[in-house]
Length: 501
Image 1: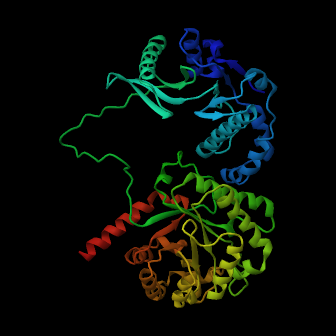
Image 2: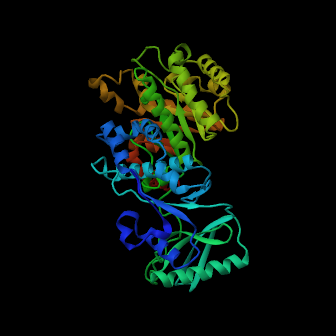
């Protein structure tokens, strides 16, 4: 199932299985350098492969929708007996820079690391046979009293050993000791490396990574010098990623997502009354992963607007009268905010037909301890012309922001059913709607209430120019639009400023 060897026993013959870095650490241990005791463990790729093939995935989206179930099933893999034997009487471990206090938690942490690698492979290449092959081996260090942890490497440009402390503090004598050990280790390995170290009853080496020196680019006087920092174009208007559909968020893998300012989740696209358990878990996963991936950005969760067509019972009215729809959504929010303590999760009330509906739904939320406060914003979706006409009354009812659903507004304003394909050309008749929105936007600015725009009309050039000129706080975009959204907004803002000048 898995293979385990003590660090000190690793030789060059073990490199194909356990990796060059682990073998280098074993070489230093045999050379009597202060390498911490520990083991190197390979992934149970056959077991992981069996679980994944059992789910018969055909695409990234199917995989991510079933990720919660996969995670539960993988966590049911029992702790291997060989791992229990190799860890012996040790009760505390260091894995990937994190302190772990039991063998069971160690096994779960190892499985989480390997599952995360599988997710990255899926994101980069899609699902393929052998997706679990060659997963990184993991170094597990036995610790007793961890006082400090960090990295150190020799910087040829500085001609000095650079020591970075991640946790704890260092005594001057410890600095001198680490300096000496890095120089000795580099001589033993012939090639400079980056070393992880801990203070646990003395200085000990616990990991090795290849050291990549910083590239030096000669500066020519004929070339402009760009300022350091994020080279991505920023705009005053925020960009919210629509995470209602599609696959998992990998912020560190997908550089386009670095510019995302917030997340928008329309729960009606996820929660399915015909598949309550599976869709519930999918919704929980999306909300929690979004809030964790973007801890400093708002995650706006729109309550489900289950619509069966124009004039039907839907939106807030349906939520108030259908507990099988309302209660699971409350469980999601309760889990994210109260159990996971993800306070960047906020609520959007969908499709309101009157101020009374708004007040009723807010009362129901308050019963679930989801009342409006500094750490919890309640936004309202504006989807009908009535919402614009009576906007002042809604603001008096107490909301923190407004989501303009442009697709719904254009349908009600122009009097066509968006489900009828032969009437879709009415969607392009936007002049009347834009004039109608002006008074409502003026009321929002007067009350200092932000608004964002949502729907396929948002990126229409004329609509976007109107929104930017009227001071929209943000726009909701699909994943494939995030890459160019900031650039488009920046150019639009620049054009409007130059026009005013």
